[in-house]
Image 1 (cartoon, rainbow, N blue to C red):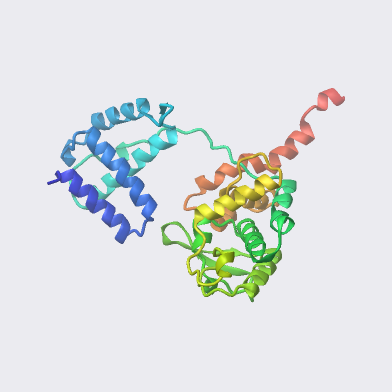
Image 2: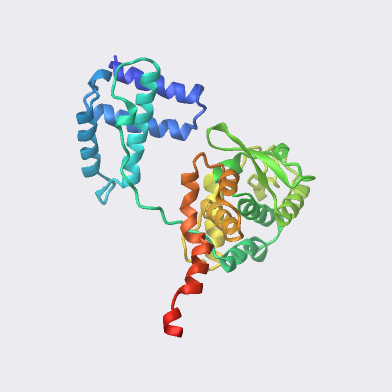
Length: 309
């Protein structure tokens, strides 16, 4: 029989699933992080979770190694453990279970994440690859996927879940369900809309999903499941390689490219936050150091004036 903290962790994970609607992946990660804490702390009673205990756990995380190369845990991974623990403590407080106050847990300061995105010429080369390398239904599907990722900035998990009924091709917009079940509107470029329309007009399978596998042996029939995020990632990587792009390109790179393109075009950061479906403006601000046109103009106007004189 498990200890009290083990039971409370299980209750918390069920709460995340049922009441908060968190994804299976999030719940799995929280389960791992919290069980790791419980094991480290020797399954303490909630009231025994103290500042000192959390401090010792942080020291252990700092020194812990993982993987075959015995690398220390990344700072972001260490923070994920603390985020899970803080969320668990908030849950305990709501349930009037005495334990450490969640605000006592501070996250480690992280360096600003460097964002990888495609330059205009790289994007152009990528988007033409499906039709350049072959024709037919698969090429049309893949071009539609690439155009849709860039046009909407959708996450690959959102794209893979789309069904044909979600898309109204008489309009240039549709609603997508993102992280935490939140709804947002995304917009289709004319190219994305036309490619999608052509792809769907040639589909003969019964699947309700927008993007499916087309097994030549089955003539494209009888398949009902949608493409998985991993399948979409593989096709993006394949076309990036064919386009001669040496960066590591993923579907998320196209999401970064979407955001960067908007900001370079003059969009305000709050609008970009809404279009990306970010809960916090802080997440969107990772793009601003790349796209701060005002600073570029200041540099161009004032830098080197004394030398020119």
